[in-house]
Image (cartoon, rainbow, N blue to C red; front, top):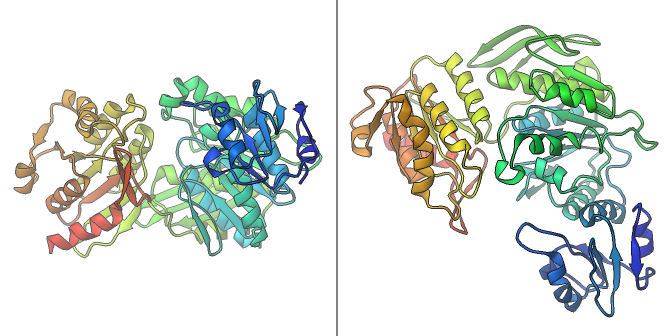
Length: 505
């Protein structure tokens, strides 16, 4: 594709050099540049892309895009107001705008995104729309399953992956759209039909610094990226009114809004609900009539995810029957209250809950379903928001008969320092603190323990459990690795729990 053709999608650009050159690939990492590439010199948190222009040119780049002066002899330089936005729009153009002509649902929020994508995927399948799903777990369609280093890929990767999956036969797409990606314009090249808001609670404040900035990044999906256009004139927003930020999004959205609520008046609400260890049975009131359904998902927060999926189905114009069948046909989301089988009557659940709100939602759900004790194993990641650590500690200890603090992904932080931050939230509760040796002798009263090794923590907790207990392994969910320092090691909570249960035998 000619550079001049790619530039047609930009509102403004200044070209120094030949705009008629052929662009063979797009790249934002100078180490991966190939001959004929267009290199985007992006501003980073720790580095500036203009520092790598010379390396990119040596690698074969024939043109550079930057949002500040970037003279480089022998190549065409394009100066734009926002290099990230330009990259997103040019990537979509380069890959033929893969989201044009197919229904695309973007889901944003702190919690519930992954489960909701699976539910919406199920609904789409029931109406004969095989959908690609891109999110925290992976980027997938049919037999293609690409590991997900980020919830939402960088724009060049996002458009390339979407093109690949559409070419494989995807006729719709469901995407988790992270706050980072919205802030960094990664999804600006996507044409969304539906934008869905689940909730907003404390997370990623190491990046966004405060809740208002975090909110404003999410808001972009409903304003900048949802304005009806000639290509997609019937765009819709689906918004959770029970979240304090929901009404603000509903008020500012650029497209018509469908609202949902468990507690108040909304377009989509619940007339009748029954929760049990077998799942959820409910009767949902919608603008097109009632939908009665049963789901194997557990708890109140998953009912919110169901309502969100109902809203997405209605926004896409699908029938009540397809919506019900799609939700009822959904059985499991990896690492979201995923069961590990136990022959002794111990309920072992693995969940990705890694924020205070998510952990409280899961534990509140378990509390409603429990028949005996709750044991929780959890940790907090290193090099991330430190403020949530004591909050999560207090929540875990308050809801659990035994809370075991352990390592998550410590990354480059001292694991013991992270554990102490979490422990600080538990100490004011005045609970008994068990040593590993004391825990091995049995759990006699409500308390907590601190065990740095995640494997040792899981084994100690499951050895202390008895039939009837619910054991929650929180924080890593579907992840099959642990990051210590700068190295990644294989580690899967589900495998570790299964091995620990065998040790009981």
